[in-house]
Amino acid sequence: MSTVNTSVGHQRPASGWHSLTRAELRVARLVVTGLSNRAVAERLVVSPHTVDTHLRRIYAKLSVRSRVQLVRHALQHDTTDG
Image 1: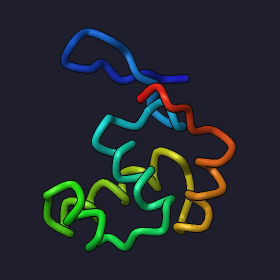
Image 2 (image 1 turned 90 degrees about the horizontal axis):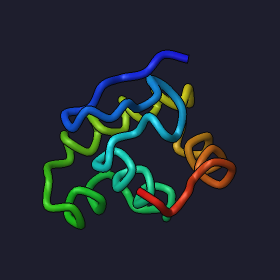
Image 3 (image 1 turned 90 degrees about the vertical axis):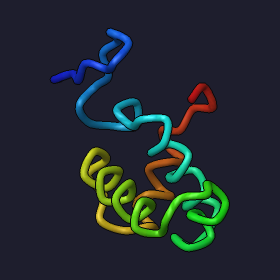
Image 4 (image 1 turned 135 degrees about the vertical axis):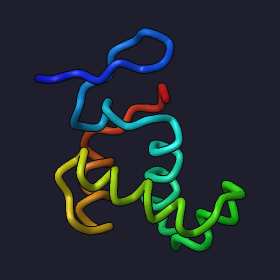
């Protein structure tokens, strides 16, 4: 499995749940609770475009194509240590 260097010298897998950045994890967890992109953006005080960008990266890293698949993936793989 390939890894990605982070700014603090840690390595993160290039794909899978543990590959998500903290910002991506926050977005994913809020989406999983059923919030819309706009509601996630308001909660995190970012633009809806930023949420959309994070979601596209999350989908690619997790190899999912929908919110439903994201929820399924989260239920199987999420940990609360992020």
